[in-house]
Image (tube, rainbow, N blue to C red):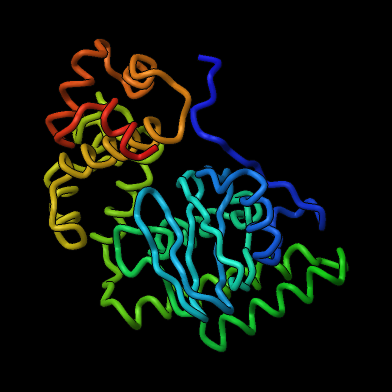
Length: 285
């Protein structure tokens, strides 16, 4: 298929080739304005730090309200849409996983932390004094240029920045760090990497070297749903992304998501969303 699925943007920095940049939100909003505030997918991670302004930001069809001193994390691969807000002030912290992850234990920041998992509310977080201080230090270090071991210094600043945001979230929501949370996060990561209509719980359990029962028990603690239902919800989300944010035909979307017959795809979607794919597409556009 040579048609564009969803507009995607790779990490490009005018500051350095580190894989980390902090930019004013005005720059992001101006870029969105030039592109008609179209939804898009980032091939890197983003944390939107709101300093001034109130409004909403859309991530995967969910509207996230923001006020002064809040943070909205957007994980790599999620589809987001900015809205026009002239009063909005703040910064976007952009980083690639390659910048953050240098050792095996560094995966901890992306896959054991819950800030990039919007299934565990809240979806926006508090930018307290500690968060803003670390943000300011990241900006200052970035402006200095590449001094001795600047990459490692900035990496540690980013880690502390993520730690503080995760702390703030855990103060608002009771999150118990145990094997169930670890398995739940691993399940979500594997599912995101293998979204397809044909994938089954047994397929993921085999990849994770656990039983389907262990997965379901872990999920109950955080989602009150089954692994089968979570897979279905994720497939439906991906279909919605393609219907609304791509130029693919219904037939092409059916094949993209793993269906052998577009007719079965239409029946599958209508049964679960209570409308035809074409009707959903028209409604959202």
